[in-house]
Length: 274
Image (cartoon, rainbow, N blue to C red; front, side, top):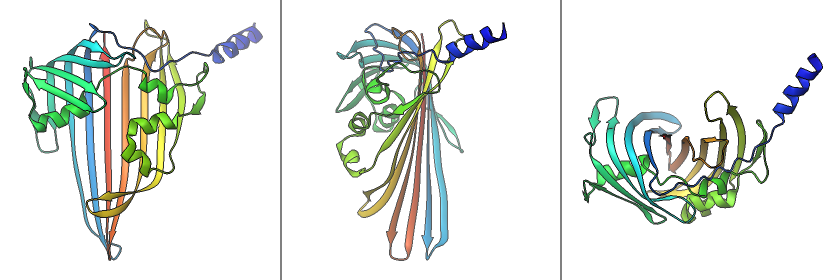
């Protein structure tokens, strides 16, 4: 009896799944999106290796909106969608600001050249547009799968290499060409079988340990760490339930006896409730 039980557990542990993380969205799809975006910038100044200043600026954005997909690309990525705002706030240590009132209608267009937003069919102020760029994305399509998909079915706990050329394409040519070394791994973290629709959680990390960029007019050394987490139904016919991204960029600039160390951290988590 005990041997049979262990055999059953062993077989279950080795079950492999075709994940297909790049799920298509369909036109006329409707869902509630809940997004939190957090940004923190820490700046340190040193003179002759002595710390002379240390400051932190941070804020977060909370967005809740009803989404209606108008059109999608050939691979199923949202091309145009409409939002009706339920909650849209910017929070700092000092105050909370309602960015747009409940019921505001936003139209969104997404393309490789950028995103465009209108508010109640009027042009969006730059201050709101920059926040929307971070909080509202064109979901779905093959890009996530191109970067994170395994080449074969995988069991829980399995790890494989990230598709670095596909990730470089997402970063863009200017940033990618500066990163001479870029590595990444993907892990099948867990399965949740308790819900009505069993789901898989996949986690990934990409790292660029050292590269050179210009900060202002000064050449600077930099590094980047990017983390991803995506929760998808095991049934590949359905789109992702949540996506989280986190980036941390370190920038160091030298000028004579002075040194500036800058750490920029951004975190975004979105849930899609259908």
